[in-house]
Length: 173
Image (tube, rainbow, N blue to C red; front, side, top):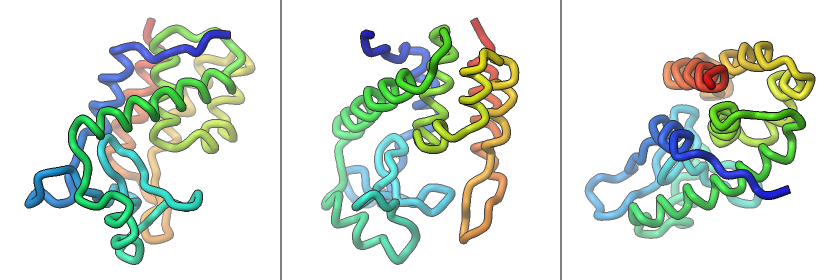
């Protein structure tokens, strides 16, 4: 089976939520920053990890900065994003067993890009989808509006908005 790619509409959709942010605007390049769940991130929402562990909070700041000394350029952020999209498209395609239109595929790639493939693989959203329950799957997106902050799961306004937008995209033709 050929690798499915995400539509331009899907790319713009993800970028609208994963806007480029800069952790240090006094330097010429893009530097790591903390996302709302205190994960070190760079470029278009690329979570920084080392040895399979996400770098979090002030304790990991120096390590996150050391992994991206001097930051990255806009072009490097674009390239990092494009590479991640290829991976997420491949991984989403591998776990979905039903037919998807371009918008459904884009919504799932957006979801996986944000919450991670392990969370998608183990979700009720994917189970319902693979059972052919598209409406039930769409209803599951909105249940993922929380993030862990300082050890507690809390509703995050940006995730509240994003999940509803993903569900709407998923249900559109």
